[in-house]
Structure formats: structure tokens, C-alpha cells
Image 1 (cartoon, protein in one colour):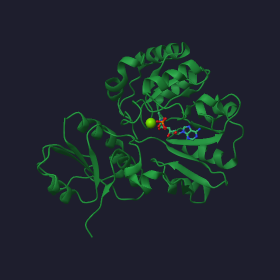
Image 2 (cartoon, helix red, strand yellow):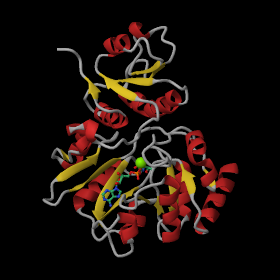
Image 3 (tube, rainbow, N blue to C red):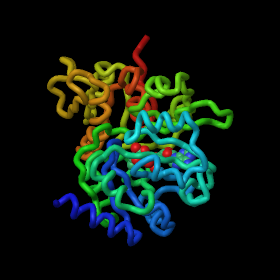
Image 4 (cartoon, helix red, strand yellow):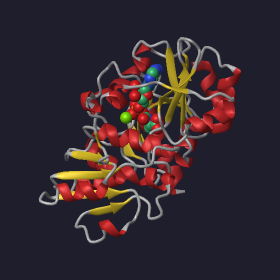
Length: 324
Ligand code: TXA
Ligand code: MG
């Protein structure tokens, strides 16, 4: 009953062109009526987001999305059937119904059906899609709880719909076909290349970003305010910084980190999906402690570990390699 009331309130605000923060299975989104450009402008203003950065449209179903895309290939339909509702964003040619303001002038629109009950119910009651980037100030860590949103943007958002902590904890995998028609992952996420390959029967290429090639060169994304580094060799890095006030985010629980003053273990057994779901919360928590340094342990570069490492790299200046 209380939920119905909240959804009705959210609809009322969105219909009136206001912003509402919505829960999804990945991270919380800062949502507006995608067909109301004044409302969409508010998203950019509140986040301090550059206007050349396009936003994802969220729908209740593939059927609801069809008027907004020019055509949908059989392969795209297969991916939607396999993963929606879920953490996969598809880049598809946009129809005239989608403003250039949404896509920053690009020919494709990013669309997804999020897997969260509250948000799906809300979307089902709206006559328009929701434009929603992650609900953080541009450049900061994405929020995975309603409290994160309230702390960062609370006073600037009319309503934060609290759907509890996000299941997945990392932003959606972004997938599309490049100019040459090759299946391409543009942002890694918990839907892995391997999972996509099982549906398409071909392995997607990864759109290489500067993050991987030259992490130090990239303007920071998803980053805490506290200086942060990623390491392959936790023990050596702790030793090296023992005279600073540091915190450690470890992948799993191990003897060597027992007794540290500021320690967060992402998954006691080192399970990657659990680690992914706890990563941003851990970064948020460490960032409020007034530390000099946050040391994050690199995950193994397999499956969801690749997405975890991608996000840690973006939060830091580059990787601390294990001594040969
Ligand atoms: O999991 C998610 O995707 C979350 C939840 C709220 O759905 N949203 C999210 O949005 O992460 P945002 O704006 O923080 O990141 C979306 C990324 C941006 O890097 C943006 O540049 C890219 O998707 N993007 C959006 N529309 C695009 C388009 N038409 N063409 C290429 N890239 C696009
Ligand atoms: Mg974002």
C-alpha cells in the first residue's frame, strides 16, 4: 500500500517535469520524462553533467521501446529476450521520437529495461520512457543505496524512491554493433562478453577506451574524493603505505589483512558477483572516513572481475603491478 502511494507520488512528480531518483538492479538513476526536454535539462544541471554525454532511456518492456527505435534486428531481439529485464543497455538506431538532446546528436539511442520491481511498476504506469543517468554528481561514485543518493543530491531531487540496495552494484553492460556491424561491448558490466557470446554465437569485441591503454591520462570517473589506488599485491602495498592513514578494500577475507583499522572485505569467499554488488558501497564508506588513501585489491581478470577492475581503474590513477 505504502509502495503504491510512493509510485503514485513519483508519477505525479515526473508528469510535472520533476526529477525522481529510481532504484534499479545496477545503480540508482536520476530520472526524468525523456520526452520533456526541460525536465531532461534538469538532470544535466543537477549532476553537473557535460551536455555532450548522452543518457539511457528506460522502458517497461521491449514493446514499449519500439516506437523509439528505427528497427530492431533479430540479434538485438535475442539479447533483449535473454537479458531483459536486466543490466544490459542496447545501442540501437533512434527514431524521430528521440530528441538529439537525449543522444547528444548521436544516431543511436541507449535503451534498457531495468530489473527492479518498484521501477518496473512505475514505468508501466507512465506514457513516456525515463531518461536516467546514474544519480551521482558527474565524476563521483555511482549510488547503490537510496542513502547514497540522498547524501549526494538529496536536496536537489524531489523524491528518492527507496528500493533497497542494488543487487548488481555496477552500471549496466553497454552493447551495440559498431560501424562495421561487429558486436561490441562499449562498457563492461555484470553481463559478460561470454554471456553475450552464448546468445549471439560470436564473441563481441571490446571497444577499447583510454582507461585500459593509459589510465593515468583519463579524467577520473566513478572516483572517490580520497586518493585511491588499485593493487595486485595487497601485502606489499600495505607495507609501502604503513605510515599513512589508509583504508583497504579487499576482495576476500585473508590472514594478512586481519586487524587493519579500516578494512572492508567485498566478499568473504571472494565471489565476484557479491564483490561487484559491494564495491561502490565500500568506496562510499571509505570516502567518508577522512583517510589519506584508499587501497583497493584488484579482482582476477575473469568474468565479472573484468567489470570490477574496469571500475576500480577508473577510480584510480592506474594499477600497482606485482613485482616480477
Ligand atoms: O546501469 C545503468 O546503466 C545506469 C542505470 C541508472 O540504468 N545508468 C547509467 O547511466 O549508468 P550513465 O549516464 O551514468 O552512463 C551511461 C553511459 C554513459 O557513458 C553514456 O555516454 C553512454 O552510456 N551512452 C548513453 N547514450 C548513449 C548513446 N546514444 N550512444 C553512445 N553512448 C551512450
Ligand atoms: Mg554514470
